[in-house]
Length: 245
Image (cartoon, rainbow, N blue to C red; front, side, top):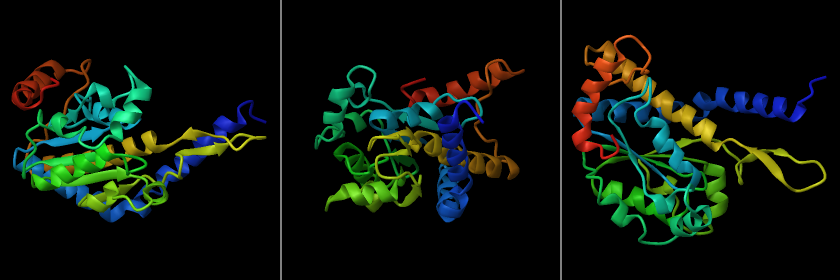
């Protein structure tokens, strides 16, 4: 018998949920890859926004080995957890909070805006999705359909606004493992599955681009042969439009 039965059960269920992502999201993944491919061919950008822990998805894609250099994280300290987690929870629910943040990022019709929100109902993420639509960008949501339906209580959801919805399949509350003797649950999955969905889309778009003869803007890991030259070229190309490079 394993000495870590809960850990083993969590990893098994996480793997099983990940394996079902194509069944749950096949058409949406294809549509999202189409959108990213179109944006790359138009020399557009893929902006990524989330609040709280979801903001880590924007950093996951940023300057990432094996990732696309056309990604731009939308980052605002008050909406992140590292300098005030309690305050960030209040700010992400505050109407009007995201508008001044987005002014730093000239999102346009040639771009994609990925909104990551597990609950899918907080004001900042919904308003960001609405702003992206108003600017003509293709808006992709990574969210939990079940959780957002339960949490909405009549409110607009990110899934209602987005052009394409990638469902992470997370249950309400995110955590999947029960704690014996209590009503508590542990083992959240939205970040792991969200990252898998996002990277699946980027991988599909990148291979399509490269296969068609269009050079996909892919970063190399810094310790790989030729990485310095490749990455320096990509940084020079995107730095004027990515304030975080």
